[in-house]
Length: 384
Image (tube, rainbow, N blue to C red; front, side):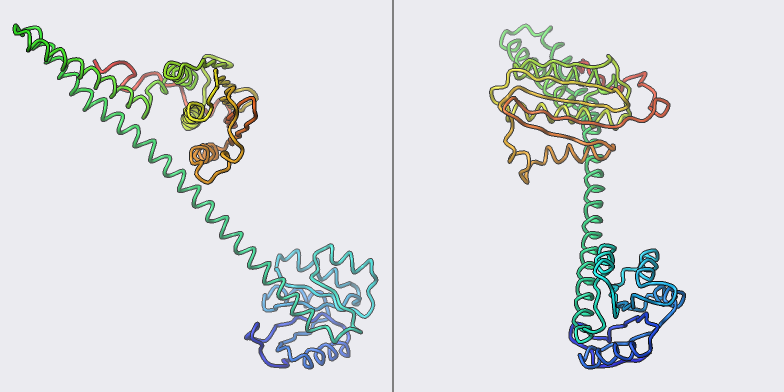
């Protein structure tokens, strides 16, 4: 191994070159060309495929210069060795005679470049260019890996946040039912007791007013609890979606039609929750954006091992820009939820309306959780 020239600004250390060549004369010409160009280098000569493989495996070389015609093999055979080892080293074919067809084939197979030996004055330029391209590819690969890692971490964070939010929803709903609901129910009973014993008309009027306020608070608490974590989810996805549709129809006046393949569709609980939240968000979007819509169709299908939920309206359709805007966190959240359970979400808009479609592959029947045989203590009935 010999070295020539001085280190350059772009390469503070000498370029480590692995030269595959069976002619000592040609090797000397390569060294001379590099010396004339003042490219600092350390060059190692090998002339057999076995020695070449050993040197490449060492990972100590920045670039390979390989003759095309060698005893018993070609430069492309050496390139195949590099590819099989998976070592991303720039590879330049340096040959005295290589046909155009062979050169094109080499470039198609991923070789960095090729140079005829009678153009040795361009060797340093070809080496520098191959190294620059290689450095750019490595930088892009690192950036892609960092981006993929960042996306993975964001997905994990989104999953953690969604899980935490659902847990907090359930905890708050339970506290509303057990604490606030229980306290309001007790106040209502006490007020009713006072009202039955009040002889003064003014006192009776105040008691009735208080009873009305307590009843209103009970209703508000019930609605909040149901929105946070509807206990009807324990009765299955179909029942939950039908209940959600009925409430939406009652609040908005829009006709909602729910089609389903069965009265009970068994899905894992995490998929059930994702489907329910998707239907909830889709109908919220209808109320916000589908001005002029008169009806909403909901389709629930578990055919061919895939749960499909489609919520569509007959409104004017969401603007395509609105679907892509940076602050569409509702749709982004739905996509993250779908990805969490191995599914995907499609949103399409046209002048005939907007459709939100959730698709989730289902596990085989023997891996599904057993149906819920009892409901939680805070059932969907009234507090009293």
